[in-house]
Length: 392
Image (cartoon, rainbow, N blue to C red; front, side, top):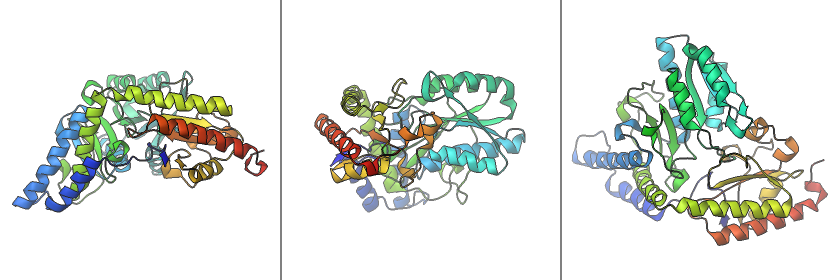
């Protein structure tokens, strides 16, 4: 198996598995209970909170544990809109882009149907796949009293394109507008220090950096208030009701510590070379194009367009040959439509239809990437000889 789908999920690290099992065996109490078993479970949760906070550069009390990135996004956006509109009915505008993960994009669309206004910001012509922050500056200057929240993803899950979050946050802070970033693909892969940025909210998930599924977090800057979306208990400083998933949170804490150690080692620089070499081998051998290649990108991600081929056919051939990749977000797999993200980038449908995302993880090796590039190249050549798989 050559696994090149790290943006979908990653293999849990052995130490993470050990922590999950230990918590299920020894820390099975309810963290809200006042007896000794509850106290042990509470200790596990709080130790994990400290590790996660250390990874992202914030205070432990600013971390809210959730079930994953999607819930964190919903809590940030819906919770902000409801809280701010309750105080000022004018604040009903959400600002985002069509480049976002469906957790943001579809949440914004649903809120739009429910009466909110969504401003879909255009892309930056000089940094494909990222929002035009000059347009954001104009929008904030003219409409800041109406805007509840601005939400941009830090690193795009499909192309790896990196948004200038520091500038976006600074602009929002200047006009007193709340700013959220979907940091799901960033945290654990790149050095992160929320405290040094003008961020209000940031969402992320453990399974993107070798932690367990079912564990996510929302960073909420001290002083920021949101309306809970899960009602029924005082857990997580009354931001998110429900008994905490102690085993998954324990694994989250270990994954955070492992990611912090890996980042401090500088290993991401070497990993970036693997992506670059893979991308160069594939594009030069197949005459294909890497999307957003002119934009600063996350070290592990390349999205390559194979014109006049179908992504589904490519993925099936690759899977048969032991290479696992995806066509855009894993959440959207099974759809025959081209990626909304790529279409929003004005990529021609004939190319978008045949675009494949390859994403590395910390486990990826030079040998895997080299063999993977050879298999991808052979698969594309095979498909191009079969007229049945070629689009008109």
